[in-house]
Image (cartoon, rainbow, N blue to C red; front, side, top):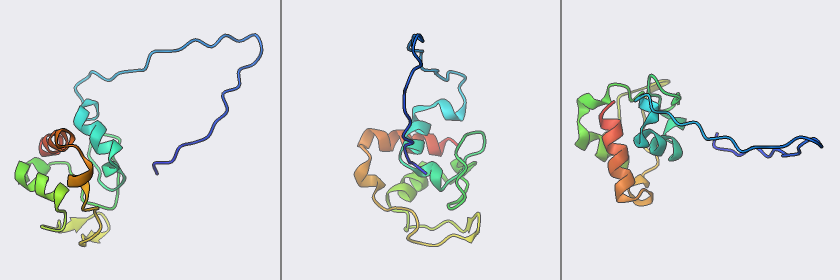
Length: 122
C-alpha cells in the first residue's frame, strides 16, 4: 500500500497526446471532502474503514458512526491513540501501540483540525 508504480509513457509515432482535465468530485459524498483527502493521504485508510468511501482498512476499528463519541474523543484518538484503545477491531480486540502516535506532530494544526472535523462527522 502507498507504493508508486513505475510506468513508461511512450506514445506511438503519429499520436498526439492532449492533457485531460482532472476529474473532481462535487457530489457531497464522504470521499469528496478535504478531510477525507487528509485521511487518505495520511495513511489512515490503510487501517480504518469508512462505509461509503474507498477506505477499507481491516486493522483498526471501522470509523463509520464515530460521531457518537464526540470531537474531543476523536482528537485524542488521533494525537494520543493509546489514551483510550477501542474495544473491537476487525480481527478481534484492539491492542495498544498499533496506531502511530505522531499524527499530532506531523499534521499541520489546520490539517489536524480538518481531519478531526471530518472524522467527528462520520
